[in-house]
Image 1 (cartoon, rainbow, N blue to C red):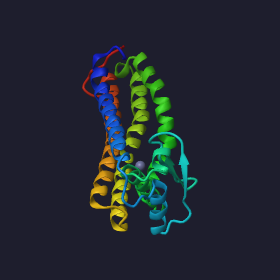
Image 2 (image 1 turned 120 degrees about the vertical axis):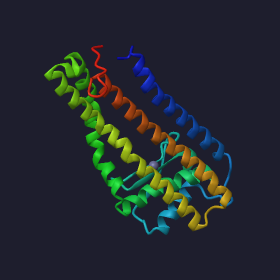
Image 3 (image 1 turned 30 degrees about the horizontal axis):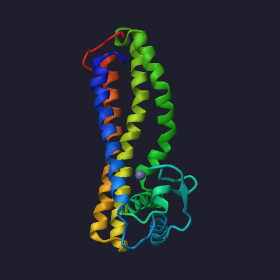
Image 4 (image 1 turned 90 degrees about the horizontal axis):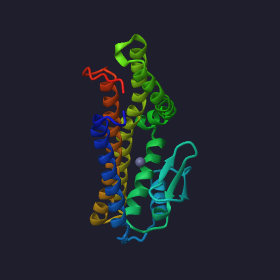
Length: 238
Ligand SMILES: [Zn+2]
């Protein structure tokens, strides 16, 4: 499989897109990290203010080590902001902090795609862990050419598809969080129009990484389905 040019053509395209998206998010974040906001509010200040404005008082804001490790944890109701966001009064920090608050607001308002994504995490973890073994077993037993192989092929594809579903449902969750973030920043009067543009660019670049993850997952799924003979009759025994 790893010597298969088709594998590299399809999955390589997804990987290239992911790398480019990661480069874009890092460079955009770095650029707008250097531009301070006029309000001088740090990422942590902005997060606390927006949370309070939305009546969310039971969510804690904490500092977490690393770069771009910012996230909202719905189980402990904790919003964790990375070092370059937590204490920085920059456009980038403001955008990221507001985005994470967007997730906290989704949680407080029981936004359905977020609930589904959280519930789906264990399913996708199990599916991705098992799929590779089942797909290998399907290849070794001849794929769609044998009864055993075809059962394993379908099972393997189904298991892998659980991760594709996860990357798909992540898209509305992430886009909605950024939409809420920008709307809240604008409504709350925390930022000027110029600053809003900076925050928007950072969030758009971050959104691209989720699109890249989805595209990569779909391409991987199609590759397995094609090589196992589920689609297109491209069965191979390698
Ligand atoms: Zn997010």
